[in-house]
Image (cartoon, rainbow, N blue to C red):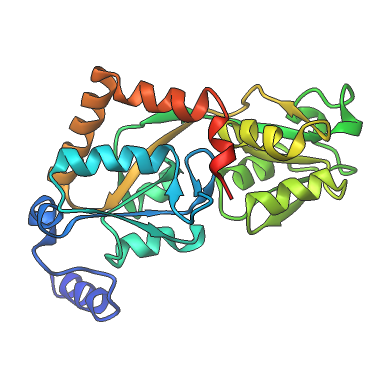
Length: 266
């Protein structure tokens, strides 16, 4: 017991543990102070920056519905770099991560996830000169090929796991990695199917080939700080509700079935 108490005290001293009654009263806090949502506005069409500087996308629209359903005083979208998004949640800079985050066993050690609100998979954007020669990710698994993805993502994990013989190039942003393939410096970009669908329309038309059959299955969920079963139960109830009443399907069609919104993106 002493060791456990010491560990808790140590975490608290570094600001990594919130010892307020937030665990018991997160929902009341949200009603009073508002819902704070961490996201990285660089993952189309889940979240991105509009021409007027506002954050738009599938997740922000879901966050608006969530805030209203929870009776939140307001909604605050907290723009957060991907490599710092879980630390931001743990240190109470936000109440929830809604940023197209894949549910993984590693992340489950640090945060709690809602039920999946979407299923995606890894796909390939291929340098056009390799069209016909490369028909799946398996064909890229040779030392002469270079594959790219974004640092700290499941795209990076998939590239290293399923295409280990190829040379791997890591980038801070999706855009940098896609441009590297467009410029012929990398042979392929490994990333989530929704993003690649948009990227081919926005930057890759006539320059890239989209191998659109996913070679992984990845559930996407909302992440919250560990130890709040009441909050988690409420989120899962909200998700079931919007799936049943059609709100989820309506927003999915808006952001994933067409690219009309691209004209509003920076």
